[in-house]
Length: 121
Image 1 (cartoon, one colour):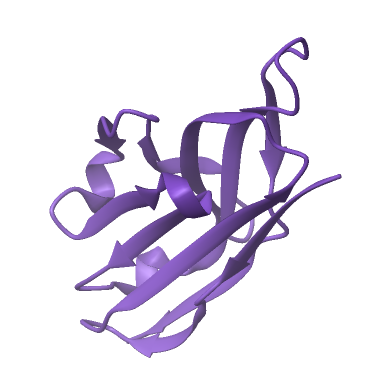
Image 2: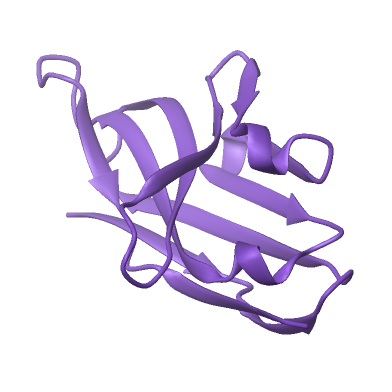
Protein backbone atom coordinates (compact mmCIF):
# COMPACT_ATOMS: atom_id res chain seq x y z
CA UNK A 1 0.00 0.00 0.00
CA UNK A 2 3.08 2.19 0.00
CA UNK A 3 5.24 2.50 -3.11
CA UNK A 4 8.53 4.24 -3.70
CA UNK A 5 9.25 4.66 -7.38
CA UNK A 6 12.67 5.82 -8.54
CA UNK A 7 13.45 7.34 -11.92
CA UNK A 8 16.29 9.15 -13.64
CA UNK A 9 18.99 6.51 -13.81
CA UNK A 10 20.92 5.76 -16.96
CA UNK A 11 24.25 5.73 -18.71
CA UNK A 12 26.47 8.81 -18.57
CA UNK A 13 30.09 9.60 -19.29
CA UNK A 14 32.52 10.44 -16.52
CA UNK A 15 32.15 14.08 -15.56
CA UNK A 16 28.50 14.14 -16.49
CA UNK A 17 25.38 14.62 -14.40
CA UNK A 18 22.19 12.79 -13.59
CA UNK A 19 19.21 13.62 -11.42
CA UNK A 20 17.38 10.84 -9.63
CA UNK A 21 13.84 11.19 -8.34
CA UNK A 22 11.88 9.03 -5.92
CA UNK A 23 8.18 9.53 -5.31
CA UNK A 24 6.39 7.92 -2.38
CA UNK A 25 2.72 7.14 -2.84
CA UNK A 26 -0.09 5.23 -1.20
CA UNK A 27 -1.38 5.30 2.34
CA UNK A 28 1.05 7.74 3.97
CA UNK A 29 0.45 9.71 7.15
CA UNK A 30 3.87 11.30 7.48
CA UNK A 31 7.41 10.88 6.21
CA UNK A 32 10.46 11.41 8.39
CA UNK A 33 13.86 10.94 6.78
CA UNK A 34 14.38 10.06 3.15
CA UNK A 35 17.63 8.75 1.78
CA UNK A 36 19.51 7.36 -1.19
CA UNK A 37 21.60 4.22 -0.95
CA UNK A 38 23.62 2.47 -3.61
CA UNK A 39 24.92 -1.01 -4.19
CA UNK A 40 27.66 -1.86 -6.63
CA UNK A 41 28.23 -5.44 -7.84
CA UNK A 42 29.87 -7.53 -5.15
CA UNK A 43 29.62 -4.77 -2.56
CA UNK A 44 27.36 -3.99 0.35
CA UNK A 45 24.62 -1.42 0.10
CA UNK A 46 25.88 1.92 1.37
CA UNK A 47 24.30 5.20 2.36
CA UNK A 48 24.85 7.96 -0.19
CA UNK A 49 22.83 10.83 1.25
CA UNK A 50 20.04 11.41 3.74
CA UNK A 51 17.65 14.28 4.40
CA UNK A 52 15.32 14.78 7.35
CA UNK A 53 11.83 16.22 7.18
CA UNK A 54 13.31 19.51 8.36
CA UNK A 55 15.89 19.59 5.60
CA UNK A 56 19.04 18.55 7.47
CA UNK A 57 21.36 16.55 5.25
CA UNK A 58 24.34 14.25 5.49
CA UNK A 59 26.46 12.67 2.79
CA UNK A 60 28.93 9.87 2.30
CA UNK A 61 32.45 11.28 2.14
CA UNK A 62 32.84 9.90 -1.38
CA UNK A 63 30.07 12.11 -2.78
CA UNK A 64 30.44 15.29 -0.73
CA UNK A 65 30.66 18.34 -2.97
CA UNK A 66 29.37 16.41 -6.00
CA UNK A 67 25.91 15.16 -4.99
CA UNK A 68 23.01 17.14 -3.55
CA UNK A 69 19.94 15.64 -1.92
CA UNK A 70 16.69 17.59 -1.69
CA UNK A 71 13.02 16.90 -1.14
CA UNK A 72 9.59 18.26 -1.89
CA UNK A 73 7.44 17.43 1.11
CA UNK A 74 4.24 18.42 -0.67
CA UNK A 75 4.97 15.80 -3.34
CA UNK A 76 6.51 13.18 -1.02
CA UNK A 77 9.48 13.18 -3.36
CA UNK A 78 13.21 13.09 -2.81
CA UNK A 79 15.82 14.00 -5.40
CA UNK A 80 19.51 13.30 -5.86
CA UNK A 81 21.43 15.63 -8.13
CA UNK A 82 24.65 13.92 -9.12
CA UNK A 83 27.39 16.00 -10.73
CA UNK A 84 30.97 15.24 -11.74
CA UNK A 85 30.13 11.56 -11.91
CA UNK A 86 32.91 9.01 -11.72
CA UNK A 87 33.04 5.38 -12.87
CA UNK A 88 33.12 4.35 -9.21
CA UNK A 89 29.65 5.86 -8.80
CA UNK A 90 28.30 3.03 -10.96
CA UNK A 91 25.71 1.14 -8.91
CA UNK A 92 22.04 0.47 -8.42
CA UNK A 93 20.63 3.41 -6.47
CA UNK A 94 17.83 2.76 -4.00
CA UNK A 95 15.45 5.20 -2.38
CA UNK A 96 14.53 4.74 1.28
CA UNK A 97 11.87 6.48 3.35
CA UNK A 98 11.00 6.24 7.03
CA UNK A 99 7.29 6.83 7.20
CA UNK A 100 4.08 6.26 9.10
CA UNK A 101 1.02 4.89 7.35
CA UNK A 102 -1.17 6.19 10.20
CA UNK A 103 -0.64 8.06 13.47
CA UNK A 104 -0.87 4.87 15.52
CA UNK A 105 1.45 2.81 13.30
CA UNK A 106 5.17 2.87 14.16
CA UNK A 107 7.65 4.43 11.79
CA UNK A 108 8.71 1.88 9.18
CA UNK A 109 11.37 1.92 6.50
CA UNK A 110 10.37 1.37 2.88
CA UNK A 111 12.54 0.78 -0.18
CA UNK A 112 12.18 1.48 -3.84
CA UNK A 113 13.03 -1.07 -6.51
CA UNK A 114 16.27 0.62 -7.50
CA UNK A 115 17.51 2.41 -10.59
CA UNK A 116 20.75 1.64 -12.41
CA UNK A 117 23.38 4.35 -12.78
CA UNK A 118 26.31 3.53 -15.04
CA UNK A 119 29.23 5.92 -15.49
CA UNK A 120 31.57 5.16 -18.35
CA UNK A 121 35.21 6.23 -18.36
